[in-house]
Image 1: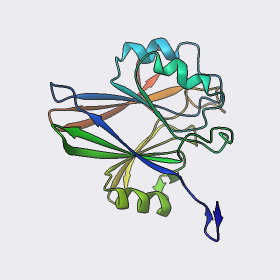
Image 2: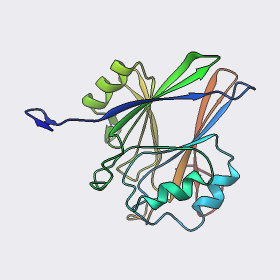
Image 3: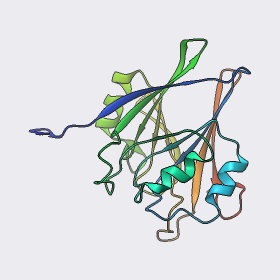
Image 4: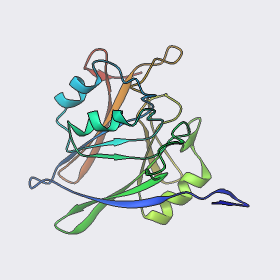
Length: 193
């Protein structure tokens, strides 16, 4: 469906529960373009995620099946995922503790322009009650704050673009705190610019 304001976005809500110890590990991947780095599955599995989110530009959807062998997957469509009609464009992830919302994450493909959150992404996050936006698209790993929101771009675990690293994100919730880092598929170590 197309309107005067552009294509209609399919927005879903998903709930994820904290573990009994109050923690949760989310691995954030993006921009696989049908060809995740050969070491990505091993390095992701070593991080023992509770859930994996894919921020779009999946390419061949079998990529999601391979990730699902590691942990449950939540994914959104990216701009190259025209054939992924069953996938939403946006997902609000409600992280719950004992049936009560602890934090909300907004997952979408395109959320930033440079270091700034796009107005449409900020509006979606505020409407959903999300405080953290998870995204991809640029292949540039990024963690920042803008418009009262945290934005975490996972980078890309797909084919190398320019001189950019091949990385994914890890979001940890523990003891009521959230921490985020990028991990290199090539070294298996924390990546820093």
